[in-house]
Image (cartoon, rainbow, N blue to C red; front, side, top):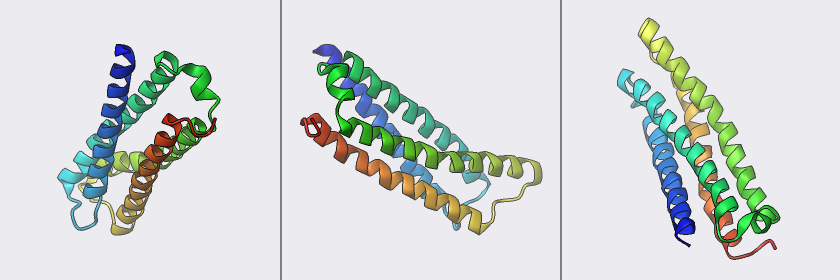
Length: 150
């Protein structure tokens, strides 16, 4: 029972970290706020967001293997697959902003130029899509935890 509680805690901590850092990206990635310091910060914030996402996935998988309900209960429930599907979509959406932040940083360091407004707005839209999809995952999670889908 202690292992279940520790796994649940680590999973929640990873989720909260992920949410904080995607929110930070959304706040920082604005045309009117983007300066050299923000370009550098976005790359760092995105890296922490990525690490948190990996931690969410790792702790979630750990819960299915070592948690009380076990793999047979989780992996046969279609809601788990919905959660994973949403998580994969969020991960796919995060690729473009990540690459963009690194490109912005390299351009800034080599030429001193900041990104153009359209590029910033496009990247922010993808960040906002991620943030909104992440908010749907707990909805599926609460139904999964209560045995729906079985």
